[in-house]
Image (cartoon, rainbow, N blue to C red; front, side, top):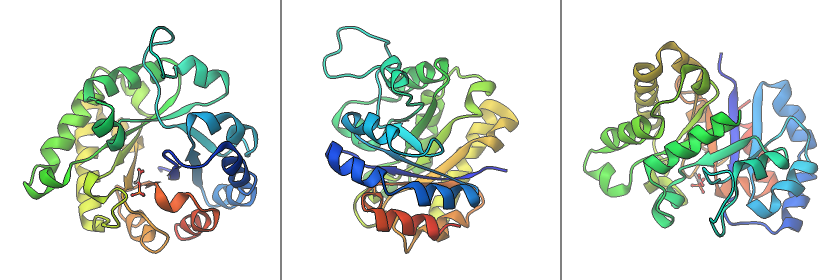
Length: 251
Ligand code: PEP
């Protein structure tokens, strides 16, 4: 039985002070989530990771939005996995579409990062999804399959049982145009089938999230889909009331 997962992606939002204010209001939510078998988390900016981690319950997931695949070296502006581990961060989003579009995050680079995360016993949240043009050209599955097969190349069954995949159609991120639940289920099921082909029955343990303009009033439909195990939420995770409502609406 896969546990539901609600993960907020704060992107480049919130100063450390604002992140701390949010963090201090999460205790009740973590309790509600735990009682209802939901894993709850947020992904603050690098600068706020530590302050958030230190001010939330240990049951709350605090994820990085990115990492480098090398442990250290001449990579100006980057953060390494040992640096994340040093502040007790054990989750990391990889391959978010904004990083794919603005920072040349390729499937090959994602693969190196995911391997490095697993080598450090961390949990990657691997984002995949097609652009609007690809969607309109009927290329969704071809694109997603490539992202999955390259991004997860040469991983072991043992490693991927802790993997989280997020299907986020690029045309739905931050646009208010959320995918229908039928599209979300169809693609998430397709992803699970590829995972099964690559890794066998462990694919049944891998959590697959939907992301893209998820709001309190539309989240429930996604969680009713058999292959959607949770949501990766940007805009609607920034405000504590809206974040709480997302949780309430899936329990
Ligand atoms: C995201 O950042 O991953 C995301 C899905 O954003 P939004 O919910 O704002 O569309």
